[in-house]
Structure formats: C-alpha cells, structure tokens
Amino acid sequence: MKNINNIRQLYLPVQPTVRQSADNVHYREFLPQLELQPFIYCYWQLKTTQPLEEAFQYRVVADGCIDIFFEANTPAYIYVMGFCKKYTQFPLDNDFHYIGIRFLPTMFPQLFKVPAHELSNQFQELAVIHPLTTQFIQEEIQFQRDFERIKDKLDDYFLQLLAKSDFDDDGRLYDAVAIILKNFGVLNIETDLNTGISPRQLRRLFKYYIGDSAKTFSKVVRFQNILRAKPSKQSLKRNKLFYQGYYDQAHFIKEFKNFYGVTPGTAFRR
Picture 1: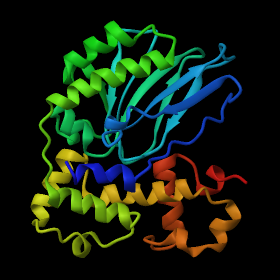
Picture 2 (picture 1 turned 120 degrees about the horizontal axis):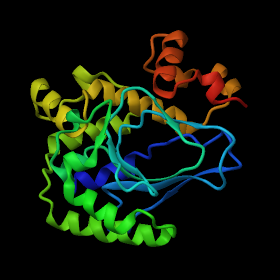
Picture 3 (picture 1 turned 120 degrees about the vertical axis):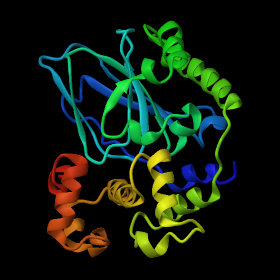
Picture 4 (picture 1 turned 45 degrees about the vertical axis):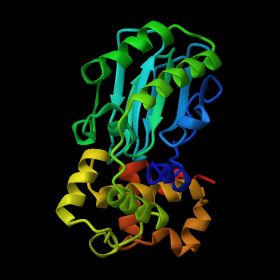
C-alpha cells in the first residue's frame, strides 16, 4: 500500500476552530494509532461544557474527506457525511456531545467498499451503509465519557477492519491525487494529470474513491491550502499568491465563500 501511504504526508485538512459560544463549546482532534494514520486523519470531539443559552449553529467547511459522526448520548442516530463541494451548516441543540471519525480522501471507500459518489453532498445513516460498524458504536462507544477510552476502542475496531480490507492500490489514481496535493490544487486538470490513464477512467476513479471530479477535488485542496496558511486580511490583499488558480479576486471570494460560508475577510478577521 505504498501509494496509499503518501496522502497523509501531503494533505492535512483543516476545520475552523469554534467561535460561537467558544467558552462553553470545545472542539478537539485526536490522532489515531500510528498504523491507522494513513487512513484516518483524526478522531474529533465537539461538545458543550455546560448547556448554552440558545441553539448552536455548527459550520463544517469543505475538506475533501468523509466522516462518520454521532451524538454520544443518542444511540439510535449515527451518520456518514460524504465529500461536499460546499460548506454545511448543522443546527444543534444547546447541549451536545458529538464524536467523529474523519477519513482521509479515498479511504472510506477502500475500507467500506461503498462508492464515494453515493454519499456526496449529503449525510446518510451509517446503518444503511455498514451495519456492523453501527452495531459496534452503539454497543461500545455511545454513552462513553472518557475520550481516551473511546479512542482505544475505535483504534482496536478499525485495526481489525483494516486487517480484513482488500485495498485497490491503483498507482494511476494515487499518482493523480499526489500531483493535485503537491501542487496545492493549482494545476491544469486536462494536461497535468497524465498518469497513464484515460480521462474517462480517471473520472470514474475519482467519482468512486473521492466522490467528485478531479477538478472539484483540486478546488477543495486549493481552498484548504489557504485555510492552513491562516492569512490575515492584510496579507490577503498584499500577497497575490493566494489568488493563484483564480480568474480574479472576485472569483476567489466567491469560491471561498462557497466552501466556507463566509467571505475571506470575515474568516480571517485579524
């Protein structure tokens, strides 16, 4: 699985820190066991430390990943969130404890044998997709309070699942993904992804393993690269490198807002 192991070295997807009611809402990410890190980017936790005065609006930005997530206190509902080509806003109650598993690009379809495009731009109940994982979470994870114990149980489960999985280590797909990641999403899809595969086959592989086209994935990677750079409003104005791959500043702002939900000026308010 040499080709598969390269993705984590090239891509570190970012979700913005929580700002609304920040004193009473905590978001944290935890690394899985080392053997799982090429496949699972992180486990994450979003929880209130005390009930809020009003309902909470949680925004998830486009990151190219697929997540399993669930409310630890509600065992009946466990979901999968597919690849999204725009931000998603979740209205939550005023008291919650969410736990998630974020899979690096291509890894959810590899582990669960589910076409990524069937999950794209939506969330579905995990029970429909993988009943065994649903049963494990309901029996072993939900209602747990100690996150270290939750992490250990998740590690054990996914290590067992990984050992049983038969991976399609198609070098042509993973070479194309690597080219996109190494170029931070700034490239010509038609001319720069010559990895020994026809454009039609490449579209099919990206649809199955990523959930959308190579072009859309490149846009998300480009957006994520800007998030990781954490530019200030001033540096956005001065540094034209942030506009690489965009027709002009208006195009950059429009695409950023589509992926984030707010303009760059609002996102980098400093």
